[in-house]
Length: 499
Ligand code: SF4
Image (cartoon, rainbow, N blue to C red; front, top):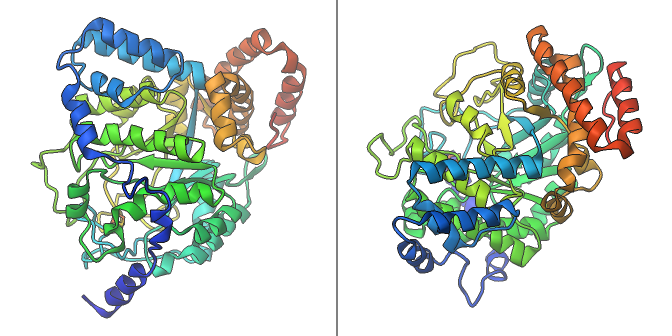
C-alpha cells in the first residue's frame, strides 16, 4: 500500500458510527434474514399455477405491494403465456401510476478516487492503472455547461467516490456549483434543476448537510444483500466491508430529512432471486420503520471492468431472460416506486424496459471523469468504471420514446413544491400524481423541444404534444385554461412554468 492509500484507508475506518447502526437493529439483528428468504424461495411452487399468478397480478394491478412470498411465486414463472401476462400487467401499472411519461437524466462522475477495494470494480484502490482525478469547481462548471447548455439535461445523478477528496464538504460545494450554472439556449437558459446524489453511506450529521444543499434523491446500492458474498467482494479493513453501515444508510438519510432515497443491487454478484427478495424487504422495511419506501429502485447488471476479478464464467451473471423477469417483478411488487435502468444496458433491452414499467433512463451518458467537455469521444477504459451499452444521445432517446408514444418529462416541480417522500408516494398510489405530472410533463417537453430538439425530433415530438393536449382537454377541464396559458407562454419563450 502506498502512502496515499494508507492515509485514505485510515480516513475511512473512522467514519463508521456504530450507534447509527445499532439504533435501527431489531433485537440486535438487521432486516435481511437470509434463512427466511431462502426458505421462502424453497417453499414457492416450482411451477406456479395460472390462477396463483393471476391472483397476484390482480393485487399488483390494484396498486398494492406484493409480499415476499408472492414475489417468490413470480420468480418461478417460466411459462411464456404467463410471462406475457406479467408483462402486460407491468405496463398497465406503469400507465396507471405514471401515465406515458418517462424521465431522463445524466450520470455525472465527479471523481474516481476510492478508498475501497471492491473485487468487481475498476476504480478500486488497488488498481494502479486507473487514471485518478477529482474535478475542480471550474471543471464542474465546464461539464455542467455541456450537460445543461448543449444537451439540455435538467436532472443529474452525481456520482462521488468514497475518499477524503470527495468528502461531505466537497459534495456540498459541488452541488452548489452545479445549481449555480446558467447557460443561454435557443430561447432560454439551460440549468440543472435536480441534483440526485449517488454517494457512499454517511452519518446523519453529514447527511443533514447534504440535504441542506438541495439534494434530490440520495442513492446508495447495497451491491449484494448476501452477507457471505458481500464479505468476499469487499475486503476486510475497507470501510465498505461494513455491511450494516451500508444497509442502514437510508434509515439515516431519512432521519436526516432526506425524503427521497434510491436503493439498488448490482445484479450478478450473487443469486438474483435472493437479491430481488432482499430489495423488496429493504423497501418494505423503510416504509415500515421510516414511513415511506424507496423512491427509486435501480438494478444494474454486472459488466466487465478493467482489472476486475469477475470474468465471463462467473456463475451468478444474469442473462437477458432473467433480467427481464427482474424488471417485471420489481414493477409488480412495488407498483408506485420509480425504476431506473441506465445506459450500462444495450438499447434493445432499454427499449423493452420502457414497456415493462421503467420510469427513468439516462442519455448522452459519459462516465469518464470530465467526459462531457472532453473532446475525446471514445469510451476510455482507464477513466471509467465500466463500458456503456447504450450510447444514444438525449435527442435520439427522446425521439425513440416519442415514436413509441412516450413523452419525456423534464418536470422537477414536485421537489420545489414539497411533493416528495411520503407526499409523492401517496399521490402516486392514488393515481392523482400521474395526471397532475402529465401537465407539467407536456410543458417541459415543449420547452425542451424548443430549446434543444433537432428538427427530426421536433417533427415527432410536437404532434405528440398536440395529441396529449387533446387528452388534457377531455380529462382535465378544470385546469385547462391555466394549462393552455402556460403552454402558450412557454411557446413564446418563457421558461420553468409549472402547475
Ligand atoms: S464499487 Fe465504488 S466503492 Fe467499490 S471500489 Fe468501485 S468506486 Fe470504490
